[in-house]
Length: 159
Image (cartoon, rainbow, N blue to C red; front, side):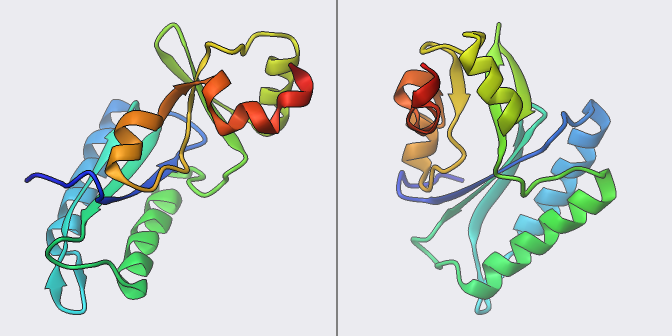
C-alpha cells in the first residue's frame, strides 16, 4: 500500500511506553480497525502503526476516499478504547517527547521546561513535533532538533 506525500497524518503520544506485548496487541487492534475504516461507505486507504513504543500514527491517503467528521470520530473512539484498556493518556498535548541517546523520553511540560532551563535539553536535542499533518511533514519534520521545532519558540525565554 503506497501513500502520497499529501496523505493526512494524526499522531497520538502515550504518557508511558507500551510494553512489547502491548505493542503487539495494539497493532492488531489498529490493523483490524483500518481494514474496515470507512468514510460514507467508502473504504479508506489507511494504516496505523505504533512507533518507538510511545506513538500511534494514523495515515490516510485521500486519493480514493476522503476522511469525514464521522470517520475521524471513529478513529478517536478506537484511541479512547486503547486509553482505557491500557490505562494510558493519549490526548495530553502538554506531554513532551524527546530523544536521549536514541531513547524516547516523555515528560510533562513543567519537567521539560526545567530540562531546557538546566540545559539537559539543548538546541541539538531531537524532539517530536506531533503537530505534523501530512505524510511529507511526518517524514521530514516529525523528529527535529529542538532549535528547528515549535518547542524552541515556546521555551525561547529559557535559552
